[in-house]
Image (cartoon, rainbow, N blue to C red; front, side):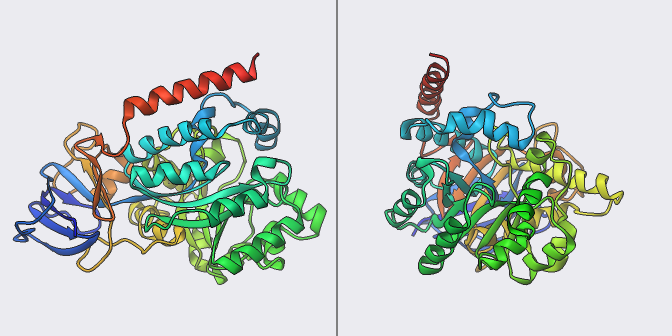
Length: 426
């Protein structure tokens, strides 16, 4: 079994600020934590953590990973215009090779930002699954489902999931894009398939006032209640955005054990005019998490940046400096994020399964007095990931991504985007 000893941890996120701490992990499970802990003679890796913050891995709970292909190409538009005029026309012609190239670049970006698990919703999702398993991080893979796109038909999505490999890194779900892009019949089929296979449902919920109004006009119900009527509001629902929801909808989601994803950077950039009611969702019992969304609407897959922005936005919009503090945001990034994706919740303590990331604690923007809480530093000051271990195996060592050739990934990406531009402007 692979074993790794993290020696002389300067600070740990989730285990206090104790210099000189050693953490021994074997086969992805924390075996021992303490100042005198040794990993034994058979440790496969020894990580010197002096001047590093040791942390559970981060979970990015809403992405469209291959949207790195569209980074900077769709700007300055509200969601409905952004989708119909800018994004969907490009996406309808994406090839499997292009999606693979975009996803692999996204994987490198996630890893470099300390992400060890993520939820994805996109086309040609088999390419994303294959690339993610090769990279060595965890994924909730949700092939996109839209009635208007042949690449995203329900039959295609089902085929991808039933043909997916078995892997401890993989969880499966269907990704009906929204209530406005999927008919009632499609959503009913999604429910039937997910009930049959135990798959999760990853969808956009109440992202804009427009989507809520559209749903009410067509069904007489707000989006959450419409999905409830179809049997989709349960513990397997991952509801991205959840911006324009009422307290009653928050209570509905919480009562049914659903998970929601706070995507503050994307929501603000697309001028959606509201802020997800995270405090009410958490109070109601919903599992709340963070997501960057895709690189076309966020431009970055920097999850710590998203968490800082979300925390500050919540304080600002509620006139409450003590709301959504660092500890709560950290749970959303780690323990709650893993639970929402269907993986065992992480804890940096003995007997717990835990993916582990180290962050540089000596760069000028993070250096702080010894009494400073490492969680506060990472949420408000950010951090550069240095090492990353998932399921006990290395994903990044000394800032070098282990399982993907970065130079080749970037070269493939540029070839894919050059072809995309040529196709758009013949």
